[in-house]
Image (tube, rainbow, N blue to C red; front, side):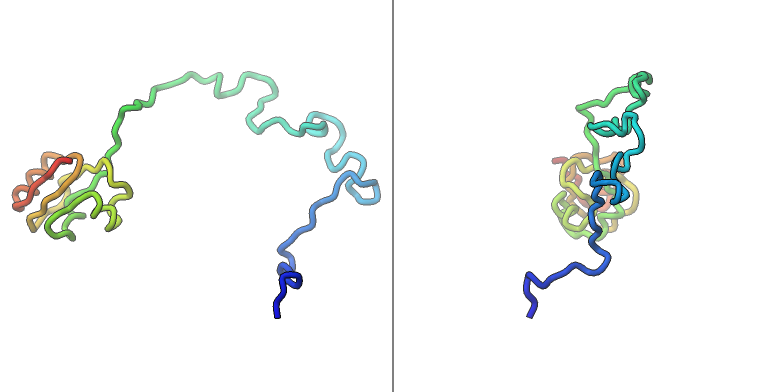
Length: 144
């Protein structure tokens, strides 16, 4: 019977912690594997990796460029050829369920491909060519 007290990790999976600063005989005494003097040997350890020795950091020396528009709307694009597998209604929820899009909001339908059956497609935006092809196939492009 297996008991909690008898469980052991597989051989080689657990490494023993390096014990430093416990006398010369241990091989890790005196300077505790930190070498002799200098900033890295002191308490408080190393400066952060981005530290450049006190000179003006590269991120502050380079000029700022451009800006990020907080009102920009990113659309997930879906082409008509991906909608050929549906019958009747196509909604953002169905698109997500089938794995065509990751999120249900901000979907734009583009006109690449051919529709052979009438579909009622619900999306946030449509390209002109997509609307023409949907209506030519007998379907409707519904803006939500």
